[in-house]
Image 1 (cartoon, rainbow, N blue to C red):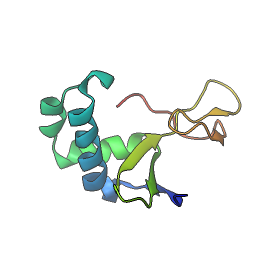
Image 2: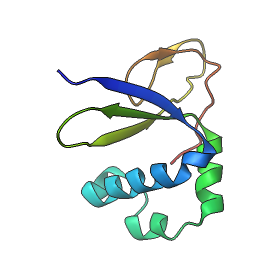
Image 3: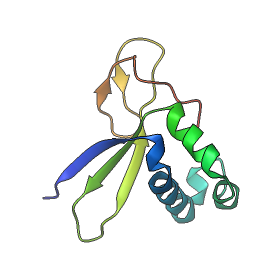
Image 4: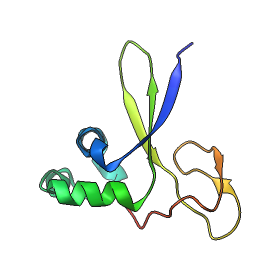
Length: 100
C-alpha cells in the first residue's frame, strides 16, 4: 500500500504547481479549458496570483512512478461540501476558486 501525504501549496510553490499543471495539460489536453501553449506562456506573476486565489493541495504518493496530483478546494454556496479534488469534507470558509 502507498503512503499518501497532502500539503497545502503557497505562492512560493508556484514553480512546482506550474510544472504539474503543464504535465497534466500535456497528458490530457481535452480535460482543460485552456491549452498547454497558453499556460506555458504565463509569467511568474500570473502563477503567483493563481496560487493566492484558492487553496492548492498537493497529494503525493510514495510509489515507483513518483506521479503527483494537485487539487484545489472549491467552496459551495452554503455549509460543508466535498472537495472537488479528493472528496474530503471541508468548511465553507475555504477560499473559492474563480477558475483554473
